[in-house]
Length: 359
Image (cartoon, rainbow, N blue to C red; front, top):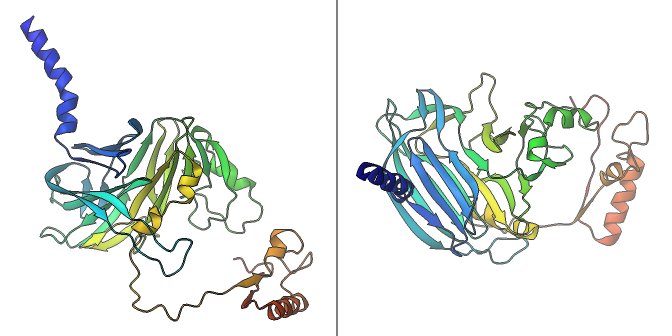
């Protein structure tokens, strides 16, 4: 009986120990919480207003050179900081951008051979969270090749989703609205008639930004920020598990990135809001992008312009010269130029192409 009682007490305390030994952070308004669940394998979860919105989800990498899987780590140390750093953009919808968040940095060492140092950074704002991987200068590796990024976002429900097919060539698809479990990317791609070049990845691949909402309602949007020297992230959907996994655009031989330490990946960004307006108004992507490196912006001159291409969009003209009234013709463009000159518009955008130019 005593053994049973002791076992029961240990069993009840296990979740407390599992969560208590790893750091977590919350948003400034205390509504969003990011918790590190484990480091072997590396997993996290996210709560919004006390409800789990991202179930335990894996993080990590597969490298092809050196050939190693970075999924199990030892936590060497961590630190948190609270940041208040509002800023002013050169131009935009807002003259002042609020920038308040808590940041958690995990200093990790892989259990693989060779041992790889990775810094995992989480930032939690009132309107969402983001994370990125940083590979610091280290003795065991300098150059490396990414085979796959293993970032996951495991959802708790089957949300209504606005999506376009994953495609390495184009993002000019019309958006679909279905449940996550009803995504059929190949079927949606086959329905498109106006895109000349289509290369859909597969039936369960979509692009970012990916907008979702649940019955609560909670609105989620998955995207990325500070995308530099790294391939674009598409999303692989597991419809049964309601899981989203990063899928990077490959090169001709299947590798995803050729990198050198020190290097920081783009931010993986999840907006969280109770209203769609909360996502529309969010400065989260702006805050996560790198600050401008320009010391002078005097040479930037905003202007107003009109575009001939709108005639094609509304069906008044055709895109191709043959088989219809091609809107980007000399007589029509002169009419636009005269209109712009009369009403003080700074430019005219002329767009259109002939049959075969799209290839």
